[in-house]
Length: 70
Image 1 (cartoon, rainbow, N blue to C red):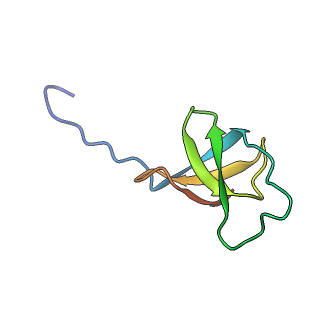
Image 2 (image 1 turned 120 degrees about the vertical axis):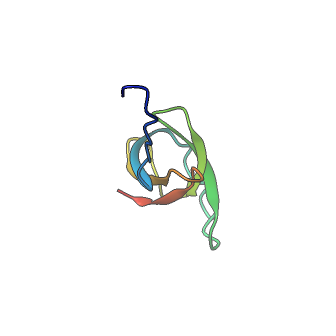
Image 3 (image 1 turned 90 degrees about the horizontal axis):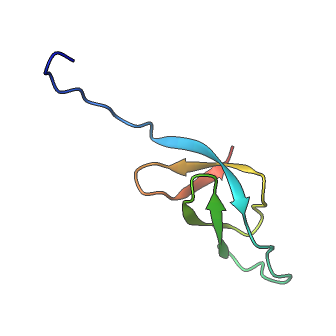
């Protein structure tokens, strides 16, 4: 804007849709077991086993990690 620098700060989290998420293996219920899921942006991250394709989740924009279901 008229040669001045503009600062943009992203939000702390965003809500994104899971487009690929393999089914959890039956019996894999140990604490904190995770699987890889792919989001609508192409980002792949570790999520809990209960997350399924089509779900909306909150992702931390600072490190790209799963926060919670949206």
